[in-house]
Length: 203
Image 1: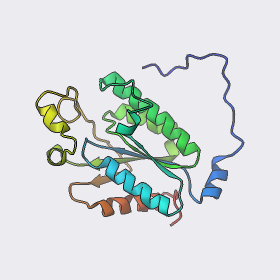
Image 2 (image 1 turned 120 degrees about the vertical axis):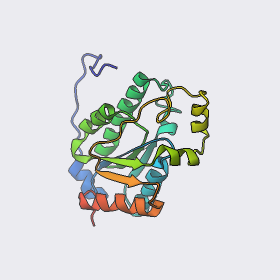
Image 3 (image 1 turned 180 degrees about the vertical axis):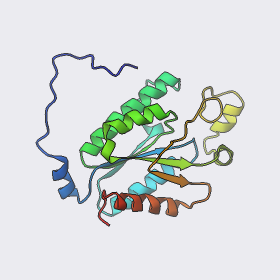
Image 4 (image 1 turned 90 degrees about the vertical axis):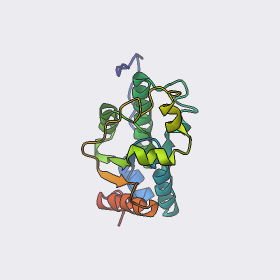
């Protein structure tokens, strides 16, 4: 879908509150934690657990979940390559707004295409952290809480990532979480350590 702006006679208005102002008040910087991986790899589970730890620590934190967003903002989109691209484009823009507002925002989306993830990164390149939730499709299938893999194998769900549609693994993610071997607590600890190391959180 086109990236050009269709509207005319619009002007960018600069904010009176700076990102630095928000960082001082919040006690942390804004950031985007982009969790990507196959269905049932553990993206939402880890993202929600990270949010809980951050929230309990007094941080401004929020999770944009793939299924939840498709109930509202992206309810007009399906799962064709074009719709997937637009799905991630919109989430990238919303994530950038949250980041600008000083939030540590986590996105839990399959986001199967590298090019789409790169476009999202370009919106906040200095505060974008791609987190590859790595899990073999065979393990994801054994979890399959929604029964989606079985339906995909039966041909009932077309264009299902990992079965009948491709997933392009990140080439240089900021963090890899192997959820087939790591516990949830260990995954959360790695994310928090990364945020401290990057200066988003104060150690």
